[in-house]
Image 1 (cartoon, rainbow over the protein chains, first blue to last red):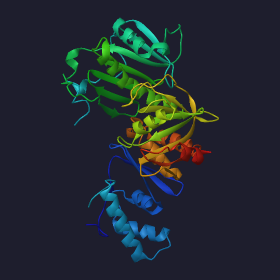
Image 2: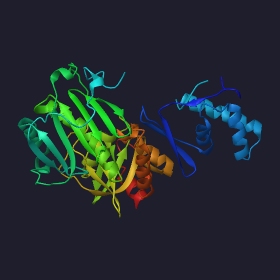
Image 3: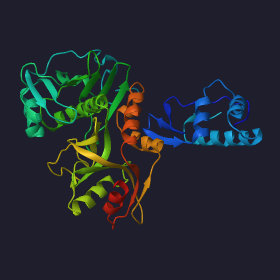
Image 4: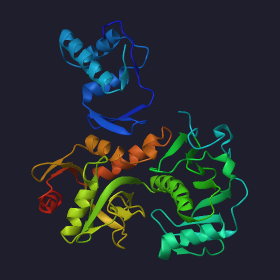
Length: 91
Length: 306
């Protein structure tokens, strides 16, 4: 369950880099590389094992021109995908 | 499983530096991508096995010859776990450190280090024959990957086809069709470097690809080794018809990164690898090639990369 109070962290073997307006991500143990769009890449960057999901949403609300409710919904959806992909450890 | 447990009886005693008792006094220079490589401390049997394996690419190094050193040291058979090699598929373990990379495999310990410059040490109890060559090549594949990294490139799990003096490099995981497309190329009269692993490096004017001495299912092909200028990098997918779809720079980096063995698992050298790959793909048309088993993707490729 991902809610505002959840604190998530990246998998230990995940490395990433912004390239143009996308993010290249690799899971080093599996040698699997993939590409995230700008928002998903920024979310992955903000998931640091300290911030809550609510704080991540607040930060993105400052950076992106979008209604907060819609943004919160998108962030939770992206986080579920990042968890499913093994890039972020589940709550 | 902890590093080396599968292969070494005492993984905690992995050599802390590149030192030991040489297997012998023989030396050999080998001209392979990123070379020359200077092989030192070989026994007579090891020297003979390598000379047979690499043929004309071998020479006797002159006094003071320069190259990337690989030194062979003697190990005791008791240092290695006895492995039942029935149905054996070659594999090895890695442990990455800030200044070295440790490799453990069947009858093999190897250490790649950067003190004071890139070099490798191989410890093995094997004196000759196919198992020694396997141990050597386990070490050499890793060493050459880091040597190519120094040269602004990478080794890539790939199939490489040469047509009219330029090369197309096909990328994809096992089962994507690297050997299949190599067979289609041979059937069309084109040359194939390797259907398993090729060496990519940057020069001031172009990206070049060279044949590594390792073949996949296709087996050894021909004596064309390159280097050849790279006309395109293509992630391959089998489909009902032939088509080409360009990739964004990030998607191109991801496609190549997933096919850059050894170094793509190394957290310490990954930033350099990503620098190299980003620089390379910005200069080479990179896309997804969908190809059909009954088709001929070459006109599609030629049009995409003209």
